[in-house]
Length: 188
Length: 188
Image 1: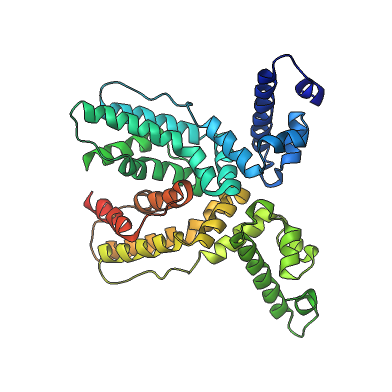
Image 2: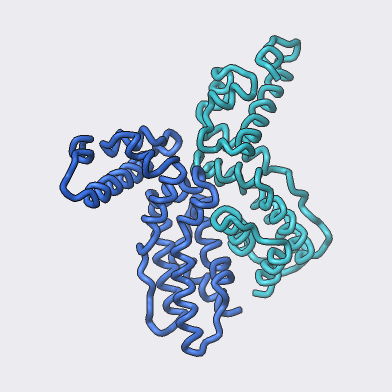
């Protein structure tokens, strides 16, 4: 996509704005997938997206804000919250999906870049939706009368090891191992 | 320290090399503490360290290698491995020290920067020594005849939540919470 295609005036400004956002997000993901994380900058992203750097800066004043926005967008609504009527089954399906996601090199590259450039906001952008999903599953079980851990306890026991292995060990856990985390959490 | 002080020829080349390394490491830690993580580059580090950029590049060809080296150096041998004769007590003291370390903003900044710029090597540089310390405590207990989890299980249960909270939630766990992780691990 060229600067002309994206920046040309259109009848619907909302449509142009959405196109710019999509092009910039796609550029970030492509560049990270190609291993440009160390050299990522707003001008480099703008060139790849085919827009002017000022267009990017107007919307995302810093690379950190841009990366947090891309991570938040990528990691929200990407995993369906299971609702089988059984918390153990739901959590098993869910951790399997999270483990599979974290085994994707592009996901890892975006996660690492968001943490590196955007600090606490970058981490939050990666996992805020995961915490909402956990809360949804735990709340449903509590409403069915079950005894449930808190979201924090579940996050410590499930997301802690999942993200630690992926980000620090560079060897994401497999799905059998991830299901074992659920059994240990619910056995407490 | 100026370029003259660091780069001037000295009688002991080994001494100069060690001084350059110390100056460059200190520059990285200072710049990260000041919030320059997004703008960190080899030339910026060299200027702060008072050495020529080529001196830095000769030793650390990329910023990623430099950050991994600084992290590895900072996070190795910084925590004493307790040896009280009791695994539960040892692990409690150890996780307390790790939790305290992770509550230090400078430690978090270096950890995030190493992950962001240096990928899997950056994560490994942050935690490799922690895994060796865990193995040392678990091995001693096994030699005393105790039943012990594997290092991987202990890392999942202790380091997973500790690093997840610090890096992703931006709210490191307190020491009481960290000791609870030990009780849960050893109760299994």
